[in-house]
Image 1 (cartoon, rainbow, N blue to C red):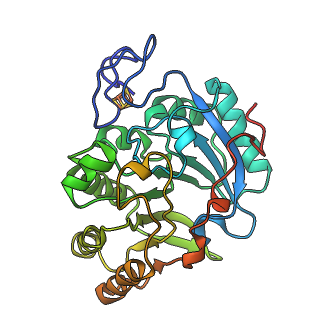
Image 2: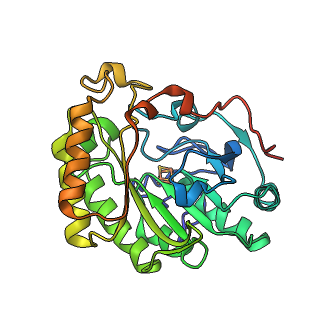
Length: 297
Ligand code: SF4
């Protein structure tokens, strides 16, 4: 955070609020270090969840705050304050729990404290950085050498959609640059026994009424990275948060919309594509943020 000016002048994500995060908050709504849940999570992609689960840490707040957020309560601030030392201890306890990795979910706005926590304790299992794709290159460069697997969303290649649903009209340009930096840091996808040890998986949630956006995202990945890139085409959309106010986000995805997305991924030649059963669009797959199966401290 605030690499050049200190925590009183936050510019650690592309919002560049210049907020004083010691005494107040910026767009992400957070100061200090706040976490909502830690658990062994079985619903990530198979190379991340494996057989024993991914050691997910869900951070509170968000620098995107999409209107349809599937983790709405925590992106709007639900959670508990921790110290850097407590976070380092949590890394160790997640490792001891048998998790395949430590999975940092929506951690961008706490990146400075996360770097400090890894200085106190670096687990021997891979570190996964699971983010919305709206990342500054400066912050990513601080994570170089810490993060083993990048798991970014690529939500939009359409600036109007990005503005309407995530208040981020520059999302496409920013995300494209961030993903290129992630690929630079982890140029090879290395899997052992079906688990990703190094590399990147790009996620894309297909949105209702937005298949043209999906096709542009897939085309960008093929043209700018390669069709060997690991991608996850997600059809699990259900209207959460404020989605009811933004039709057609007020409905589930139609099977034909997901079919168009998957067909295009196949046409692009993506060999390493994860797809979902449409019955995964169920709120039973959303974690319960009233409890933390691995205690936070
Ligand atoms: S991390 Fe938060 S306060 Fe800092 S620039 Fe991003 S949104 Fe603003």
